[in-house]
Amino acid sequence: MVARDTRGIMLMVAACLIPGLVVTAWLTSPMILVNAGFAAVIATATEAICQRLRGQLDLNRLSDGSSLVTALIIAAAMPPAVPLSVLAFATITAIGLAKYAYGGLGNNVFNPAMVGYAAALLSFPLALSTWPDLIDGLSGATALTAFKFRGGATVADIWNPENGFGSLGGAGAEWINAVFLGGGIVLLLLRLGAWRVSAGMLLGIVIVAAAGYDSGSSASSGSPSYHLFTGGTMLAAFFVVTDPVTHPASARGQWLFGLLVGSLTVLIRIFGSHPDGIAFAVLLANAATPYLDRRLAQADAAHG
Image (cartoon, rainbow, N blue to C red; front, side, top):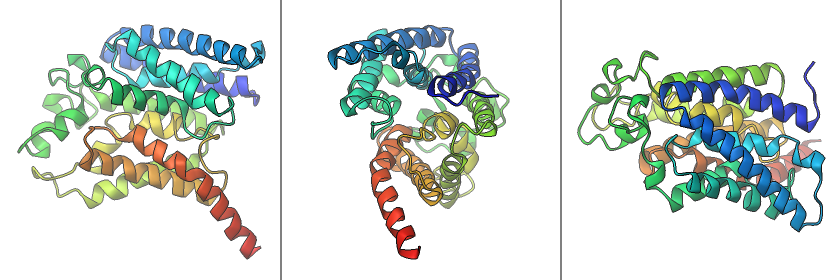
């Protein structure tokens, strides 16, 4: 039996995140695990300070696991070699600004982990630009970076087993995404996530990616499988967009929310200045959540 209180749910989410972190550490650097522990300490300390400043220091809320999950997501999204100061900046921003500026757990409009990550990406882009050489075998470039700035190379020139891409056979982002996918499926089987949001995001990625794929020329925007198994796709699909506080409550709203995140992710990857657009896609969709809830509630009332 899975505990349905906040602490039980958050600890189960954290447990399902850990295999992905371990595989990332194995394929890149053990520092990812150090980062996760460091971010967890910073997140807890920041939460305690915020509660104290509000005059509401509560050990039960402090140990509810929500800050731990936020810290693990931030650590998983960042390169293992990211400076600890940048990691601390992202974590403090996530807890202090995205969570407690809105009143604490359950009141935030935007996903805290994505706010922290996006703030760090915009403030320290170089620190988040490269990973250890092992991740994809391309001089520290991630699959998304190598693909986006490939010049006149075709898809096959970049996305092939010789470079560790394309077949789940190399020490690359595909295996990391596959493990996060497995952890996410466990959460859905335990009914600890809104499956429509995850399915909508993945479907949105497939639809938009398929529309821009031309079988692999130098102008191709990448196949659906490429977009599904690069960057933080599966981490976001099962551990970020499923945050119940920041996605719509209705079934139709969850489908629309997921489709919006998936579509925007691919569009930002193709046309944006950053190789991966997941954080920005999630935050834009978070901003649409109140409208979707209100609009769909009105529609249901009109048909009721």
